[in-house]
Image (tube, rainbow over all chains, first blue to last red; front, side, top):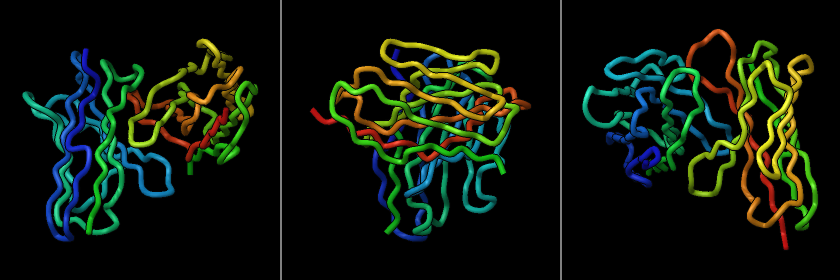
Length: 113
Length: 114
């Protein structure tokens, strides 16, 4: 059973470009979370999704950020018009149910030039 | 504002020592608390999860305790090894939500030298 798969591992974008981060949860997991780790800061919750539904996006910036978890395919975290402050490690986690243990992916390191 | 503080921020010990990592939190209504390990360039590995009704959990050389009333958790590592070198994070799940919205501390960077 493969773990949580995130790609790409590293993503470099210039200011103003779009960044798309992908996350495939563990098999059998229908709950997906995105967390962000800014330099010198702890991980912060961004968004929680179930298949085709955003349940809690309270930690996600109101502008330029969006997330989806379609019926088929991976979850996508999309950042439009990236700025240098978006440079961070973005981690995806999944769980089989709401209050079960979270399993984390290896993260995507986003660097904005 | 709900916060998690981890002390010390960094720790360097010789191999074989027993050590304690500390985690304190301000939210007394937690549902559970987890300790994670993060290796450079890798994701988080869950080490131990303690439910709010439990006092401690053990796995191999690791023992985690939870004291909700004082807002503290400790991770005890026995007979440390160089392979234990990593960043250790604690995170709690606040009560009131039915999903894994975790609040993380900033971590303790542990170095175990031979």
